Image 1 (cartoon, rainbow, N blue to C red):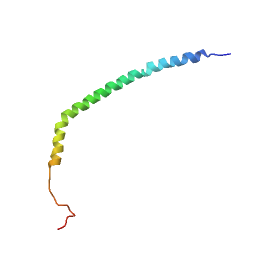
Image 2 (cartoon, helix red, strand yellow):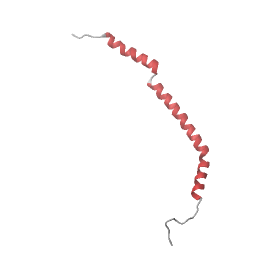
Image 3 (cartoon, rainbow, N blue to C red):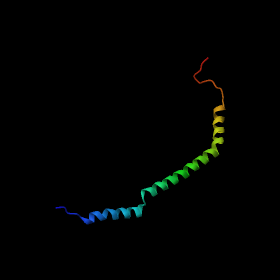
Image 4 (cartoon, rainbow, N blue to C red):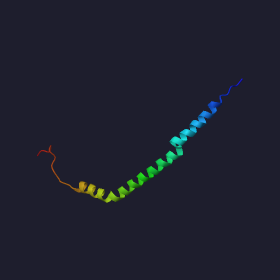
Length: 76
C-alpha cells in the first residue's frame, strides 16, 4: 500500500516559485554580475590607457637616475 502526501508535492514547487520571485533566478544574478564585471573592466582599461605614459615616465626617471657611490664596506 502506497500513501502519497499531496502537500509534499505542492509545497516544494510553491516554495520554489516564492524563492524565485523574492531572490530572482540564478540567471538574473549571473547577468547582473556579468554586466557589473564588464563595466569595471572598461573603467580599468580606460584608467590604464590614460595613466600609462605618466607611469612609464616615472619608472624610467627612477631607473635612469644614477648616482654612483662607493659601498660603505669598501676599504682602500
